[in-house]
Length: 253
Length: 237
Image (tube, rainbow over all chains, first blue to last red; front, side, top):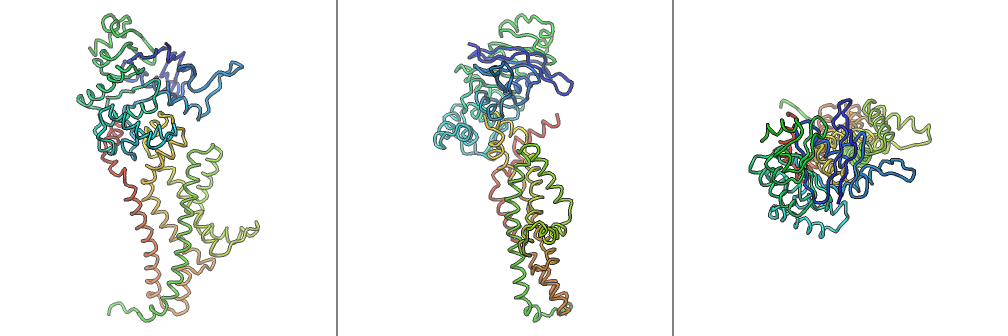
């Protein structure tokens, strides 16, 4: 079943194109990994999907509705009010390269604040959910610490729990391990793998090709703001079609 | 004795000095508290409000910063009555200093909020918060601690600016001190007493400020945290 459909997406920074006519479908339970060199538009694509960056053209469709606007009865595109957009963003969890845990909140409250303030659940319910999710990312014993007391890998796992607390339909991972050493990277990927095994739909931007091979159903290769190739993981590594894909993979494999 | 102070005289005028200190203290406390409330409220509209409101608040800030405090006081005392708004000397002082305090506070609030790493806001939006929630629950609590030292500085200036109220005959410290000097032609004794009183009042503010800073120091080790370390790395790359 189709969950996400990116349609003719374009994004410019000034006159520099960051994304050029991107079309991509993601199905429920699918694990899509985006690869490509830095500056190829992978992160921009993720940031456009939840409208942290507003696309200049094209549509994002997620499970029955468009993000960032809707089409009215006269078939006109109407932009979302900020509150509508905020409401739609609940369905999309995001994990950032820099973790961005809320520095003034304890670990448990970093996870609980979404359910508490956005979903207006009771403090007890929110914290209970947070504890459950922290256990899931193997950090239950750190619940009462502050972010700066945790390692990078631990912080990133908290960030994952924070996103999961909103029960999103789609999880976006924007280079989740680029700031981490190999051991911490492994820690984080283990958690991501466990989530993948549960069937959570995810899109991951990463430079860790081994991990991509392991977790992905589908690989998207991007270059210069364009999608060059979309292929199943088996096919793309054994038999890449596009010359540019072949060249990129020859560097990283 | 090298410095021969007339202690007896100092003792004799102490009640007058204390009474004047009390006036200065009252005006200062009112102006500081009201200034913080008004400044915080306007500061939030400066960040979140509709563009015309933001512009309006920015004009207010420019006005406060660009016009000498003495003119604010004179304007409220002498010009407002033509608009049928008449305040007595005491409240003229409170209102003028409140406006000055608020004007500086707005800029302090804005810059403190903007100094919070961009990722904090984005993370808040990504879990479905709107801008208002992100401001109240994520940005302001972190900005609050950062603005305390700067704010303390500005508020100390506001307290000292209360000395300008002597021109509209508020019986505050400077006015009373001046009067005593010209009445008795005694300089050092009076000036020392007045200075000590200002020091005490400003020290109360400083003490409160450092208490607040410690009390809200949950994010104090931020400088050493992996987050800020990382964001530095990110900027270099």
